[in-house]
Length: 208
Image 1 (spheres, one colour):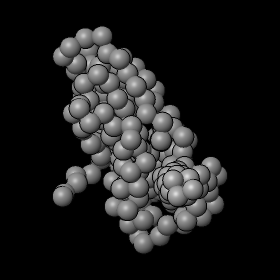
Image 2: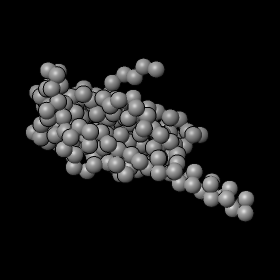
Image 3: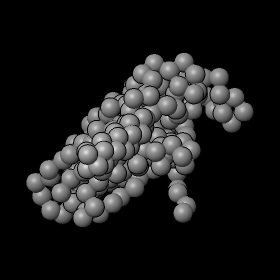
Image 4: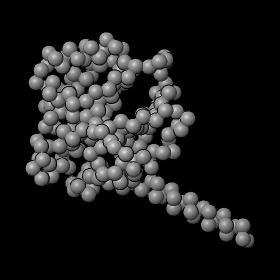
C-alpha cells in the first residue's frame, strides 16, 4: 500500500510540474485587447521548434538588422539583397528594426524585398518593429497592443527555436522583461539539443 501511495504522490508531482510548464501555452490570448493579455503566454509557432536538415557543410549564415533606413533608398536596398544572394546563404537572420513606424505599408515593402532572398529567413523583433510611431518614446502605450499584434501577424512569432544538425538557434524578444524571456527559455529547454552549439539571437545587445 505504501508503494502505491508513493506512486500516486509521484504522479501528482509530475502532473503539477506539467501544468506549470504548460501554463504559458495555455494562457496565450490569440486576440488580446489589453497589455496584460498581450504578454500572456506564447503561441504555438513560438513554442514549436522548426527543425532543418541542411545538406552541406559548412553552412553560410548572414545576420543583419536596423535596415529600416533603406526603405527610403530602394536601389540600395535592392543592391543589398543582390549581395546577400551572391553569398548563397543557408540562413538569413533579420535581427530587428526592419520597419520604422510599424505600418502596413512598410511591412509590404519589407517583404517585397526580403522575399527575394534565397535562404531560410528568421526574425527577432527590434524596438521599432513593436512600436507605433515612436509613441513609447513619449511615455505612451495607447497603441502597443495593435503595434505588437501587427508584428505578430506579419512574422508569426516574437520568439523562436530553430534547430539543425549543427546548432540550436534561439531567437528572443529582448524588448520583453527578463522574466518573460526566462519563461520562454524554460518552455523550450526540453527541446534543446545540449550536445550542439547554442546560439542566442536578439535585436538589442544582452549583457550578463
